[in-house]
Image 1 (spheres, one colour):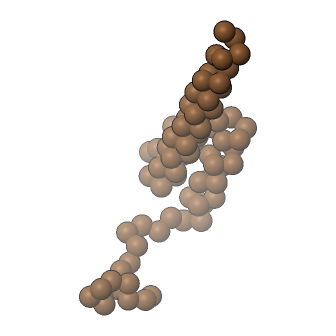
Image 2 (cartoon, helix red, strand yellow):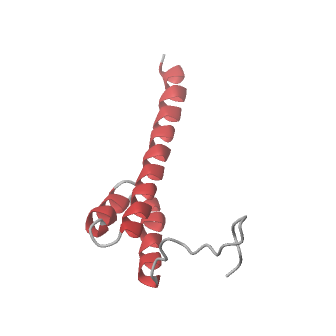
Length: 85
């Protein structure tokens, strides 16, 4: 491992996820296209007690999809009221 700090000490990562955890983090990200809010929420609720890493990634996916849905809703509402009135 390289010397990553200024003092020359070797820095080890605090936690290295397993290959199963890495595979499970793909599902909320990819399946967000199918069911934007539901899929990350289900994976977070199922894995929150078993793996902090998977639960964190599912929460981030849920946050991202919620923000995207909110922005799309606001853009549609902001643009569509002009055509109604």
